[in-house]
Length: 136
Figure (tube, helix red, strand yellow):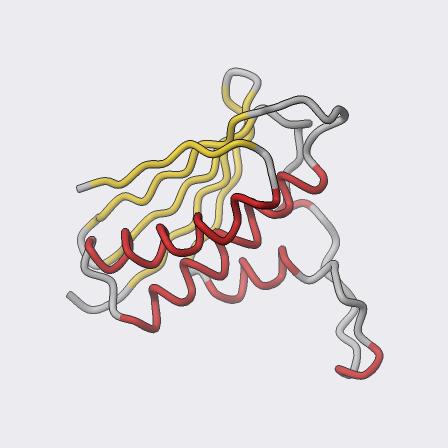
């Protein structure tokens, strides 16, 4: 079973994407705690694409897909932005909350929240996949 959505690279799309992600994950059988993780990581991943992925202000499309597997949902984000492997980015310095920067922790969040994260560049497109496991 699969749910898919295509959105333009606009920040205004994040709220509707978040609503869709929670509904889609729930329809695919995710428990509420994993729906929250999926929403958080998907929104963070797409936000990074929108904010950092493009060298121009032109309209680009971002494809999002949630696929049900036995005991898990796999989330895939695919875009035509600049090549960027988030898994090769350096880990942020862990600082006390009061000293933390308001950005730069998204990749660590993905790694901490998903059970598996992978990246590949396919046909000129970035493909980030995240697996979220749960008991069936």
